[in-house]
Image (cartoon, rainbow, N blue to C red; front, side, top):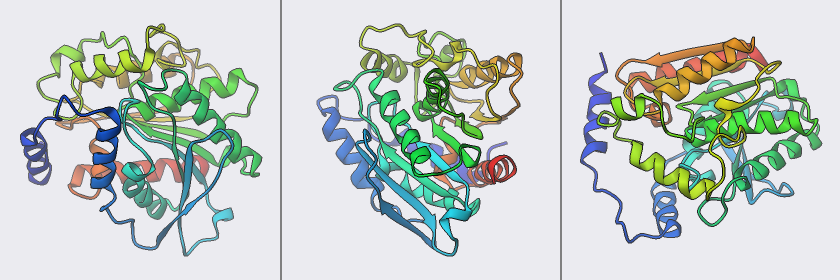
Length: 300
């Protein structure tokens, strides 16, 4: 049963005003970033901007008490339906991961839709991974992590890296991953009334902006349809009240069928992207600690 702390957050989200339909994508991004900028970083974690060729923006989050070269590295792809989200929007959660694991976390900005449709986000994310490799970070010590659309990018960048002959990272972490842009699974209808974070109509609109008429079954857009043989261990988390529940469970089945080690956990009563509100309620704390345990075990 969900905790009272979570239920309070769910009620707050459900009662929040809907976005102004006249708001432009740029205005919405600026508003969300302004709100997120007030979120402090985890204690002892610093943020350092870095330039990577082919990446619109990037920043390292790292715990000051550790030598960064001794730590595993996370490449974090933010969520936001490929329309919104940034380094700023996810720096709070990224900093907690940096402190908990401990790890150095590379947050990146990638080009967003509708101005920059598929595969711009994949291309920019692949450039970030190349930048990490060029900097001498061992691929076995790198884990990809992403939430929502960022969870889809975890899969897309792994497939794209293999297609381009790049070494694979040591692990992947997919939180409420959006890996099927056909948006046709049963959970899209069965959970639509339960998910106050990301509903079916949101998914349909976001997919149309991102794909811009391209095939939703392209594996670099929808990793559910990719060939996963030989891929590294994967962690997949989702809530059982989210429209993307079937994305998570279906993706885990595809991974298992391909012989990939997969750690799937479905969280009772949780909505889309529940982990990134750490540490506001027990479920987010438990979920984030599970991520840290997985990363330490596989690439730490």
